[in-house]
Every structure is written in C-alpha cells, then in structure tokens.
Image (cartoon, rainbow over all chains, first blue to last red; front, side, top):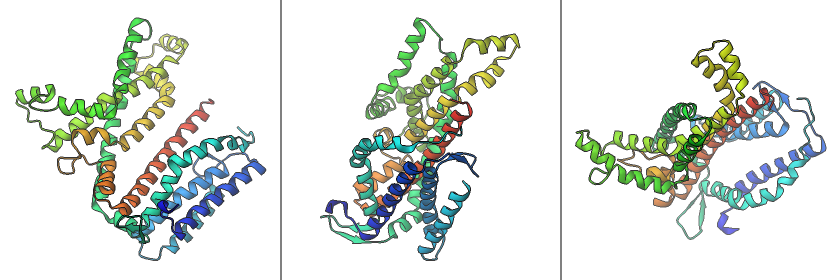
Length: 90
Length: 290
C-alpha cells in the first residue's frame, strides 16, 4: 500500500465516505423508501440526497478555500448545514 | 410512480464494483493522497495540506485552460448538434441508400483518435496537405502551427468531421421510432414543415438528443489526443485544453501534487455536469412515462 501514499487525514476522509455508503446501503435494504420530489423538482431517494450532499460539499470546500480567509473547518460547518437542508427539502 | 423502491438489487452490482475498484477507485484514491502531499520522487512524500488546491485555484493557467475547454465544448456542441439533426432529417428513410448512408456515416467513428489527428495534421500542412496547399494557393493565410485562429479552426473542424455522425446516427434512430400516424395527422392539419419538426420530430428526438449532447460534451471536455497530435497545444497555449495541460503538469513537469489537485477539480466539474445531464435525462424519461 506504500505506493498509494496514504496519510491519516485522507484515510479518515475515505473511511467516512465508505462508512456513509455502508450505512446508507444497509438503510436502503432494511427500510425501503418511496422517492420524493423536493425543492429541485426532481425525484430523490436517500442515496441521491447523499450524493448531492457530498458533491455540493466538495464545491463548498473549494469555494471556501478560494474565496474565504477563515479556517477550513468552518467550511465543514457550512457543509453540515447544507447536508441538513438537502435531506430536509430536496 | 408511488411504488416502493427495492434497493436490494444493488448487491448484484458488487462484482462490478470490485473490478471498478482496481481500474478507477483505487487510482482515484491515490490521486487524492497525492493532492495533499509533495514528492521529489522515490516514493517519499511530505505533507502539504491544502496548498496545492489553493495554488491551483489561484492559477491563471488552470482557469485559462478551463475557459478554452468550455469555449471549445460550446462551439462543437453548437455546430455538431444542429448539423447532426439536419443530416438525420435528410437521410433516406429506407432502402439501399438508407443502409449506404448509415455505413458512410459510421466510418469516421471507427477511426482511432490519434489517426484522426494524424490525418488532419497532414491534411492541413501547407507543403503537402490538400487543405493547407489549396488554401495557400487561394491566397488565404493558413498555418495551424503559428496562427491561433487557424489552429482553433482546424481542431474544431476535425472534431466536427469526426463526431457529427454520432449525433446524426442517434437523431436518425430517434426519427425512425416516430410512427407514421403522427405525420399523417400533421398532414391532415396542414402543418408546415417547421411545425412538424417543432412539435413532432424534436420532442420525439429529445431523449436521444440528450444522450448525444451528454456524450459529445463529455468526450469534448476530456479531449486530448486529437489536438495533441495536430497542434501539440500550440501555438503558445492557444489549444492547450484541460487534459493537455494536466499531462504537461503531471508528466512533463512531474508536479504530482498540483496535478493531482487539478485532476480532482477537473473530476468534480465532470461529475457535476454528468449528474445534471443524467438527472435531466431520467426526468425527461419519467415525464414521457418510459
């Protein structure tokens, strides 16, 4: 694995995403759901909302890095608010 | 519409996931690891944090390449989609000539990218190429190695030549699926040619056209080989698109960290646009009840 040049932060990053995927997979298998139409006008399931959250979070972090001077941790707070909004309304 | 979705079928995708892990996921993870570190080779890495991302976000070079890439994709879509529809509308519907046209149209699609590049590279040369020589004799200044307008024109015409057939074939497939009854109804209503196109053919082609636009966008957004063979990204940086710039950075300069950060941002943009296209496509399908 040395060639992959792992670091602790990136390992935590991928570990979190993997854990999220496992949790959502189990949730979807255990509690099947009906897709709903939200604020974007498209049908979404929990998995879709997770994808939108993760992709949006990537762009929020990049925008924070490029435009805001404050510490990067605060971007994570914005992402969590964004995630809550996506899961509530999209 | 209100059926419960059973997601258990996804477990059947696991074998594919394992295969994709080796060809895509693990390399992508490695790129992410590279993007937060610096190296001087020998597999020794130093922590760099988010510096490379910050550097790339401020890099004029990346924004310029992105701008050129978007302009290129925009231009080729603006040409290939209407042209492809026009060709499809004028292709014979049945008989020998229909098959003949289909074979003829698919020929450019069979040619590998680097061969297309070489064909146009020679075709455009002023000394031995038919196009370059003719333009030169007509008194038109044309030199794709020195003039950026000529370089852009060559790269765009080459892409149009290579890929318009794809749009045409998809649009043709969409047209063929329209039942005759629609045309008969239009005839009874004395609909004009434009109305037939606007209210019958275009809506029926919408699904396949979305696929065509998605495919052409993705492919043009990742274009590397053809402009690399013809212009090498020049003159200057005039035709240095994202992939060409990325390869220069990663392999030419061995700046693995910045190149990794660049790749991740490139990947995110592609992911976002693909998701938007995919969502629009599936929603179109649902609305039509397919």
